Length: 85
Image (cartoon, rainbow, N blue to C red; front, side, top):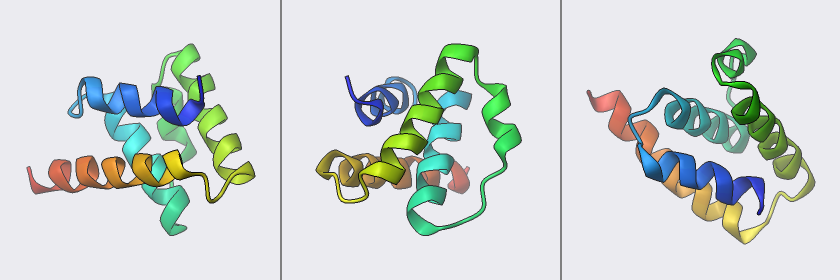
């Protein structure tokens, strides 16, 4: 399964979870060229950390991949919702 799909599942499962928020901020930062504190990745357990690295790798290698666009849209929505609270 692609890293994008796995990340989307984490975000969909519980958008308010720490992991979902970290992935959402990471994805928005990658797409928008914003800063992202790498120390946030160290808050993830090891397998989820490795998934985050795979997301970064796939993002770099496949900038126009269709599922990336869907993942970005979803991550943006989660990020916006969490900022409103």
